Image (tube, rainbow over the protein chains, first blue to last red):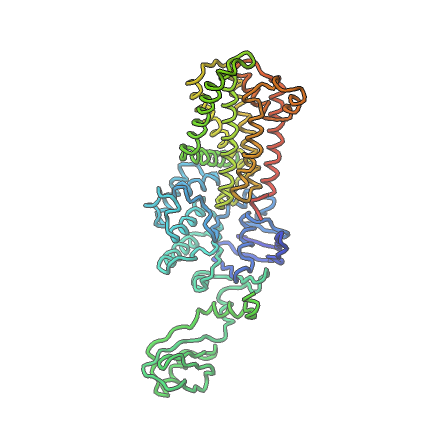
Length: 310
Length: 256
């Protein structure tokens, strides 16, 4: 059974903008799935249709086999969503926001209070339960939206940029929390601009660009397409110029003690270090120039400069 | 499923009632103060010079109309501001993503509007005791008309909120439509005082039926036949109910 099935999904807005051009997508039950794409690619439109916030122009969407057209009440009860923008009443107390959301799903008040307490405690918001939501920090507001989306125990959770504007420490805590939720059987679909996040957490990935899916595969097979990686090396001694290496083409000197080298898939990092040491160059430390998925993503969704500025 | 919808309905209703009771200084007190001023100025000061109207003192005559005016404006204002506020800050999406049928959303908001309309109505009635001693001819009719009228204007408020694109839009209808119709709806005068032509024109004003049937509940007499008045109110409710549901189903103003 698929947690989500999308067939030939189209969306054209009243302005004439064709946001989705016939998307097909299947997400397995229990998956942690990344839906990636540049700004304006159609991710949020797609999520909006699944959540019932946007009317589709054509196509079919099923959540655990239930059509959002014919069985929308059942389909919706299986879904929890965390939108990109804050969409709660900022004047309401934190606890009330979560309890009310449970009420909309028909959860009885006593159970709603218990579940609210559980999730607010897990997400570190329990001590703020009586505060008006507007008094929370940005990170707390994000966590509040996650608690609200989980309170009715959905089987499919859609997270649209859940860690946007959240500091790295908190982001890692949220990753761990989402991992736990996924381990307990909840299917998660994640959109994010932090590709490190997607690479770390997701098993499968789809990349959407210009309203079409341009890539849909497992994360592993996607990353295999990357035929080189760029490393930044910090050297012990200063160099007058970038060394000429036989098997490595792109060697760029960034600083007298820092060079950047592209390592082809056929070669290892040991080959690079060995070749440098043979020339008396000692590497003190190194790092990936960019995240691997990010390199692929940029290549796949690359646009001419003029188009980007348009 | 029905239990699920019932819980959702109670949640929306409770939330709506909490909303206006939390800010009671803005929602309950101002209409009470305003009506007290009406009683002082029109009832006591000017009213004493006017004498009787339809066989009763002027202050007794205007009392049901002033209560009805408060019910109308507050049931309307509650829903229009709450629903538009939910649209504006996008927390209407909390209900849209949940398995809540549009009928439940409509009933929840309308109940909130009715609750505020009746709360203010009761408060204004209590204040009116300071200015006039009144008896109630038929409590059932008073309650029925108050309930139906607040339902009707709560739904009208919802339609206004659905189409509103700014906070200006939610004040245009109350200012330019609701207030004039209310003032010309027989609160301060009997339509029998008007020339024949204007009496006929007044019959096109729906608020006239509400004010007069409400007055009948208090005094046992009115310008309009009670059954006709109730039929007019019920017809408007049926039409607005259908319009509200169609708009919510289409997602007008709330779904792209």
